[in-house]
Amino acid sequence: MKTKEMVYAALFAALIAVLGMVPPIPLGFIPVPITLQTLGVMLAGGFLGKKIGSISLILFIVLVALGLPILVGGSGGLAPLVGPTAGYIFSWPLVAFCIGWATEKVWPKLKTWKLIAINIAFSVVMGGVIGAVVMALITNTPIWAGLVASLAFVPGDIIKAVIAAIVVVQARAVSPVEEKVLGA
Image (cartoon, rainbow, N blue to C red; front, top):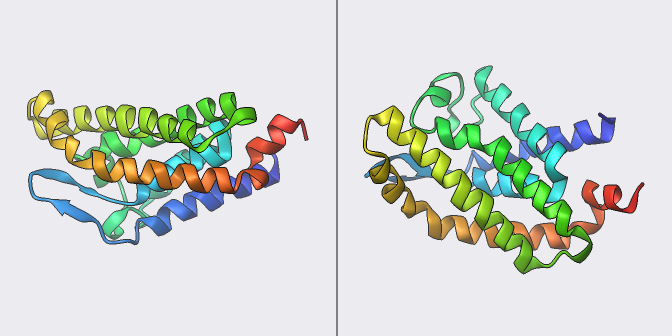
């Protein structure tokens, strides 16, 4: 792994930590709040690509496990990684990988609408389903109830998918994916 790639991974882990400083929106009927950190996950996958994007999220999770208070609300340590939020958090590297993989596939003909669709498919749908199922298992509630409750995240996540797509398309020229595609 090149130094530049390590720096990108660290920067995006830091960006996701900063997004965790924005106060969460608690939803009384589900133990997982609405946060901006999923925006960072989408940005990492789309801007960094599959390899660096997923590494940045693995780094983020390692920092959380070490106790750094970088999750929303200033939490860190092992508790969030074994509680109701675990499925959402552990899905992030996979989500970033899948977004990065799909983005790399369409990079030469990248359009905002394509990236919005990619973000929705992998972050909103796949990440949401993984998170909701694990949350339901951990809280000992029916899986269908977890899935229905997690629908509350969909409107905000779609807005984040649009924002992430616009940012990635606008910053495309400086993305490591651009360098990779051009063969630099």
